[in-house]
Image: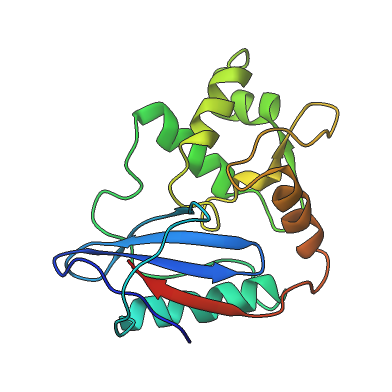
Length: 175
């Protein structure tokens, strides 16, 4: 496993998966703050992975292998951070079962704002924990795949992954 190091109080890591690079932020107690798609060019210095990152990497590998339905690591206090509306949207998103999808309109209805499909899309774009609150499971009303921080091809692959085994391995680096 390749690792990269950065700051000591709270830390940010890059984890490379078959789906792409994920940027993982921990608080000083090594609890998960965010896990978002990283820029391809992000690099860092070598260092030892914290136990929570090792657990997360293993869980991601199992998730991507179809052996795990959700990621379960300690979250920092107050995570996910967002507006009350965003947190409601993410809660609904988190409840979408693996292998199923919901439309933006269905999510809007579930949060009590039936005409807020566009606002649902904006909340999805700010999702700090895409594997924990699986926003890839939210699609257009016709089933069409729309916007995804990791790219539409990754969204498609994640949806396919949830019905089969596509994963080949993980590698982690710390910023």
